[in-house]
Image 1: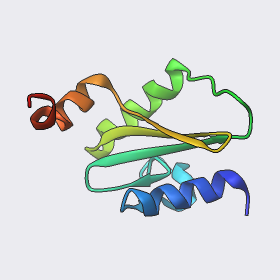
Image 2 (image 1 turned 90 degrees about the vertical axis):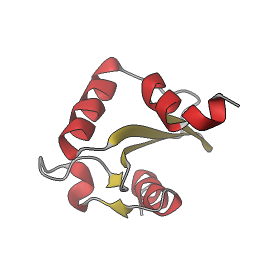
Image 3 (image 1 turned 45 degrees about the vertical axis):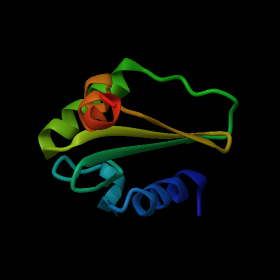
Length: 100
């Protein structure tokens, strides 16, 4: 199985969601996986860097809005996994924790 496909399946499990059929290539089933809260786009590279483009964020934001979920970008950069969410979403999700 290709690394990007493994990443998508792993994210679905790790976030407690389910993988989207066709890896989000259908307009009615956007994203690579989803949970009740998050629409997840998974990216994987064996390179030492990943170029984050505004167009990727714009697309993810639009698809999340359509699916009534928050956008989450999960990136594996040569074995290091990071998650990117919009600052406003992070603040809202962490509101109780940040105020302590």
